[in-house]
Image (cartoon, rainbow, N blue to C red; front, side):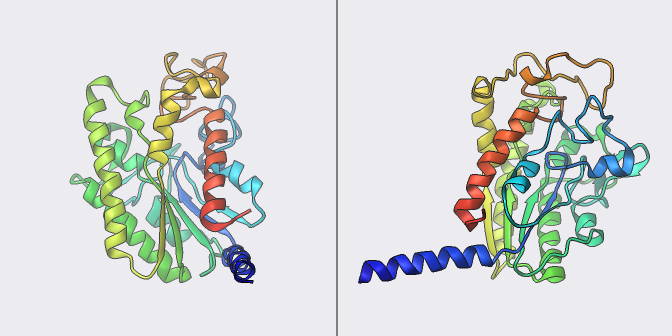
Length: 288
């Protein structure tokens, strides 16, 4: 009898978990962009990029969206930072909305029952290492400023939608990306590691009464980079596109390169990323 009651409670808990989430709302950068930048700027050029994605196929988020039964609102924009008031990207004279700007200006139909995923920070950190690649407004840009921007945006989402559930993805180890020069790899590694720890600590310290969960995207990418052959890829052959947005100097075998360009992974990496993210969403929230 007792086992039967426990089983019923577990089943009820699982049902409640599903019912408690009515949609996923994602705020993100180019790792998640499903063509939002392209609709505004016609960048990146497609082809060789796939339908406006910053890769040669769908992003991880699109694989997740296709596999679940609830709506998935993707606000990802390539080049997005945490706040355009500090640093921003622009393509073809079109300004990319940062996290703060995405929250303030994009309608998502979010509710207190929605799950809000935050995948951001890469461009801010890269702007510290490679400021010439961005429009830097705040000359004192730091990991502390970036972490505060994330905390402030989370507070804005809570105020706007009465949000109760957040899932955060750590910044990937882009010190391994071709965009980072050999001389900068050590300090980039240190910056990423310290930022990921800081933003996690700040969120836990300053956001109260809210369900905060974290996915170790950084660790997952390290595993893939250690064994790219498991995905039928290689890191030793460099990116298919040395740089970003090129239309001529492109390799003829992109499906063999871990990096599609100097900033972004290839489609099979995204597919694997989506698969692991889906597993985690099912485990954490029983989303199907």
